[in-house]
Image (tube, rainbow over all chains, first blue to last red; front, top):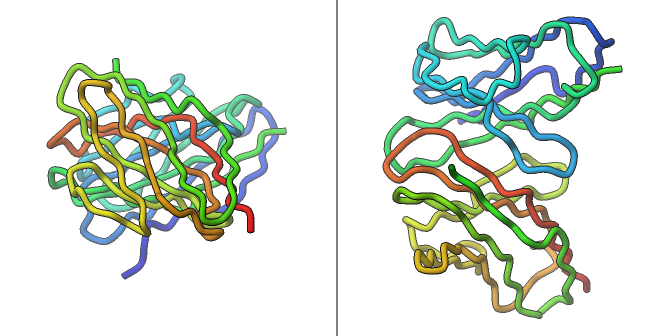
Length: 114
Length: 110
């Protein structure tokens, strides 16, 4: 079946603009994760959903970052009043939610803030 | 706090040589360790996890709790092994966040 799908693949925005990044997880996957990957670094956790419930948002760097998954499927990561340091690849991953099951990653959205 | 350290950023070897990609972790609970790989122009994908104790593409990794390590090894590297490798730490039995190392770029020369 289809893997995790993210859109857009690339996003360029001017500093101060708001952006919205979409993630479509593998069908039936309960758990959904967002990670931020800066250039030359490993992915860093942002937030985690189990179905529609956001169970962990400890990695969100500021209140400009907001994520939602209203129907327990598609998720949107929104960044308000973007800043240059927000430039990164944003990765979405999903898993079945069962113990010891791996996370499956999308291709990511490369965000560039000018 | 959970932490993963990959001490080397780059490793370059010739085809047929052995490779070892180092990974050390810090975690007070029961760890679950993974190796993810990202080939050029492809998405991050799971290579192997310690709980499976399996060999994938000739790679193996053993969890050493005494040394808090999960080094990735392959006896004879192939050119198609050239990629970015990330070690990741999760909590055993959980389905929650992964903590990644900074990654290591492996280049296998012909």
